[in-house]
Image (tube, rainbow, N blue to C red; front, top):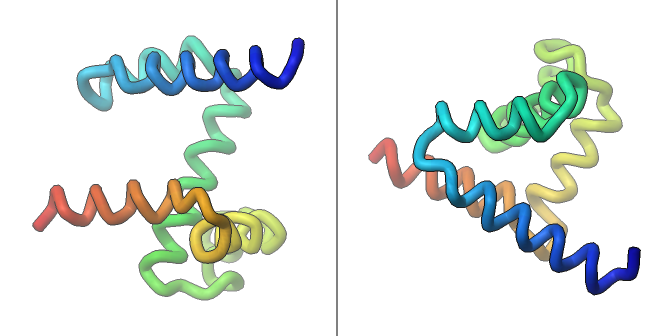
Length: 99
């Protein structure tokens, strides 16, 4: 599969994710879409992002979650340095919802 098709497939997946109307529907879709291990890994990364945003240290997060410091470091890099800023975008949107 060429890079253009992979990008089209990824965008189609993004559109499919946006079609879920609530967390329950999203959970159903992700359960069908992913293996239990993939789902756990995604949830784990999201938890790490939230804990980093709350100011916890890498070691605290690793001890609390059992996640390797390598994973914590990777999530932290995407949270703070990478240009996509997807974690940051969603974290801020969720904060706005609770205000």
